Figure 1 (tube, rainbow, N blue to C red):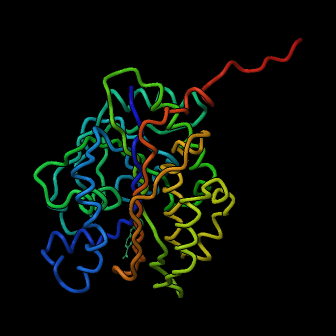
Figure 2 (cartoon, helix red, strand yellow; figure 1 turned 90 degrees about the vertical axis):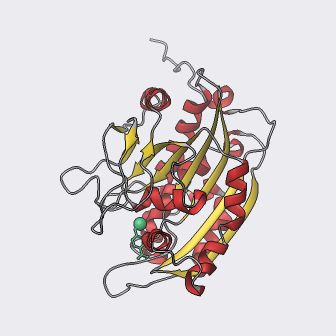
Length: 306
Ligand code: DHB
Ligand code: FE
């Protein structure tokens, strides 16, 4: 069996990775950012899962205009760190979990989500910066990672609602695993408000970002009504990355009639590079029954009587 224990949400600003790689984390500008992750690093050492399903977005690194998959599930054994123009970051390669990923693929695709399965791809800052923020400088990442990449770079992008529903399908899949005992975390990464291009470059919207965090915590279903143009208008053209977070949140116990998750940690800071940094750790209540498969797992289709 597998148990979805905690969700972690964070921005993935590439300059955060560069600050770590170049030894700048104690500089006043960056210290304010990293201080927001001190609680998390301790928590992460004490709550290391077996596997992280890491929802992120590729930035035209592994995929480009030649192929634009909406949802990619990484079913490979390992993922090399991408060269994004300055050589690959000096961080460990990422180890996957093909058996568990294959199970997730089977369940989610049969649950009517058309995933693209990818066995070989490089991973960019969207995936490695969250790992660095949480685990610091290590020789090896302490977890296996199943990448789940969402297209938010090339229109059309999926809606928040679709991401939330994929989260629910992901949870049904996790709850159906009958292999070895697994502690699973899902991370939602990207955002918060930022726009890197055009006349509005540099846009930050603190009020909107914090409203997003508030709703993510107490009203994720309501958040699914926010249309993609609202993300773009309010949080900038790259703020749309925030839909990635709804996959991790849609999979939590309370979205299946269980208890509200605890919010263990919340952090918000401006600026880091061109981006507002947002970060949350939330946990499903310990000991509550994993309710997903029981309540909304696949049931027999209702057949019309002919
Ligand atoms: C920046 C932020 C991002 O999310 C990204 O993918 C690239 C750059 C930035 O703040 O510069
Ligand atoms: Fe990004």
